[in-house]
Length: 305
Length: 308
Image (cartoon, rainbow over all chains, first blue to last red; front, side):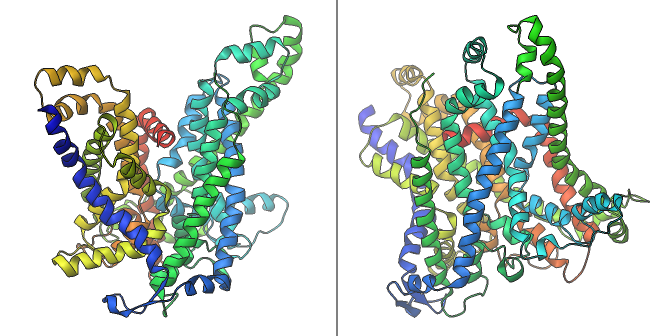
């Protein structure tokens, strides 16, 4: 009797989640792949759809704005993980040394992670503001000591500083999260390893490279994948910090904001949906490729302990 | 990191003395470093709260000065005229049912995945995995159209509505929550469910009366993770609720979207003190909740991320 009820039960419990997921997640994902091969001139009817094969992708190849955005993603991809992980590892290393007050610092450092990206981005748009911002305020106070007047520099309005500013904000928010992740990983490394190393005369630095990093490797890999995916997103940061413009001359534009501009922002009037989804498909392949590559590149023999 | 050598009981007395000078310098350097980052984290927030109490003129004249008279009016104006209060209310209207249904539906599916063998299980697992690997940007345009077509077919408005956003939030939270809860249900002892079966309890009775209460710790972690995820959600409301800013008092914007809208308004009607106050209004309660529950939040976020 129990056996008979089993299938009904399994069906009953899965029906709603599978239905919602199929309609609102899977259908759009696979629909996007089909749409990327089309030209849509209207939203209201399906009969305005024309099949265009790979034309949208061909257009991407010669679309300077696309490559501009992608190049910014690649810069973020290089800079964001390296700096975030270095700072996070440093702090996590310090916090597992039994420093007094490390609990307080940990709580403070993690807090930005809890704030919404929108709030963080608006907060930093104040910080970067040319006239009222504290960044110019601080630099001005320092240069003032030497009698130099610092101008009202527009950090988010300058071609060469807009992207670094956006990356800085992302790092500011992410460091605490990876720090806590690494602290948890470090605490599970048995003390005996360090004690044995100390007896052998290894200093803190050697211990860090020879014990901590190898035993933490799986966590670091996970972190690299997360940060790579984050580097391909950046939508909320860039949108809010540049007021939806992608920065001066689109110098802060990334793929996600460019896609939004093409599909919804009126940046492409001839074929917004077909071209927008084609950019999305390219983004998908980049992300899948990146996850594979970063897992492959960071692959080492896992140390059991 | 050599501070470890200093505190080490294993170090011999002689090197300890020489190390302690270097050790002290290192310790000071460490604290300076930690303090610098702490200031970088805290100062912008503190500054925005203080600026929220200034007049616009004071904000622009000197970023360091304290307000001559604290302008609590800025907060009132942000709350009512800039509708921050309404945005916060809307967000809760969306995410409370959003989290409830996410947890309910995910734990039902997760329980089945963790404890039952059935045909198509692998296919379904792969299906849900897609939702965690694919970028949400890929889905945006078709999702928008799905919402539109549901209206055309059934007459139920989905775009720019709370129920539409709730359903989409739940759908996009399922993948992660199902995988997290499946891992959690697998850690629970099998014997309890077996004992309940012998007592004649049905499958769903076992789930709701025995297993779900046992999964409380997992549900709390998943709940925190989803709370932050749905509270912070920016891209989905931007696309799906783009025309939801009806006349005053009628807005359906959620908080992240509303803040961005308010920031954009600065170009037409400058109210920086109000915007600072709005940021403070959202930051202060977040900070309080965080201070009280930081242990749980830290664990919920990091354990969740790794297991997921």
